[in-house]
Length: 77
Image (tube, one colour):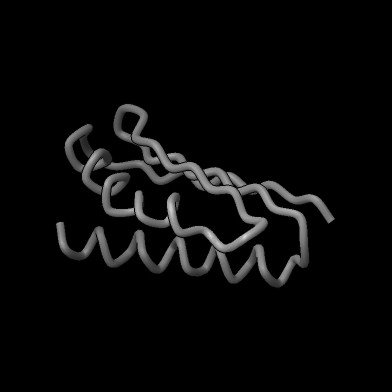
């Protein structure tokens, strides 16, 4: 099944959103086979899109991982 998800997180200012997007950047490079991810800072927002063909459980696990990594980056800042 082909699936897409979009996660948008809003922050107080551009430097914070850029730092969060940079912290998530390695996930864009090391995505598992069949999962396409893209993360970018857009103003005070960080926008991540996921595209994959597979099981819904895999999509949910990937989203959980993304949100966990985002939370960690936020706590560091």
